[in-house]
Amino acid sequence: MYHACQATRFPELCETSLTQLSHLPPNTTSLQIIQSTISVSDHNLKTGQSMVKSILDTSKGNLNRTNIATICLDILSYSSYRIKSSHYALTHGNIKDARAWMSAALGYQQNCWGALKYVNDTKLVVDTMLFLDSLVHHSSNALSMMVAYDNYGEDTTLWTPPKTERDGFYEKGSGGKLELRFNGGFPSNLKVDVTVCKNHRKCYKTVQEAVDAAPNNKKGRDQYVIKIRKGVYEET
Image 1 (cartoon, rainbow, N blue to C red):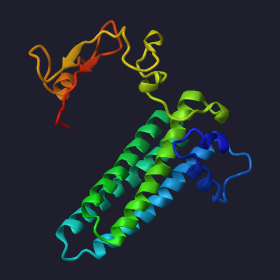
Image 2: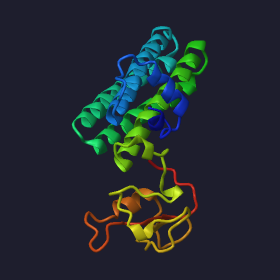
Image 3: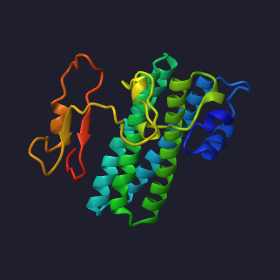
Image 4: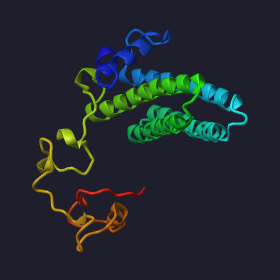
């Protein structure tokens, strides 16, 4: 359990939450640890939903808080569904799907927290935001473990905290070729297909336009590289 938690962004929270579980067997497998961490996230989500429901029940006459609490409840129901989807995928050996669903669940939780900060004018809302923040941490830990399991296998002693391309790390099957791996910064030997910029003629003006221009099947190479020049791009 210790090694698995060290592969997360919040290892102390991870160890504390798993230690409190009474149903964990003495010699837990890596998958059982991940499943338990998902269960912790699911349990805390139910509490978060209850707290948001209390905000809604005590917000009569406050249209903004009522609307946001209503939206939050919808968002958290989506998160609950995706947590269950993640658990199902994991138990059926579909680790990529499990990661995708947990990532979605985490995003919904963050969206609810972000909405509540606009009506952060009561103690109940403050307490709910603090709880949702801890919920996000639990879900993040579950996702981190899935990533480690996917990249390094069942041996938790090989697991490491989450890394990205900024750290010079490409996942297996991510489209990154071995010769393109680098130690931070921008890979010098990447061929740029299109450029997004604000102040030049020969480039796309939005990131979305560049994404839309990507071919369905890039012949000869498995990457389609978009270079985004410095600027503010206000788009979804």
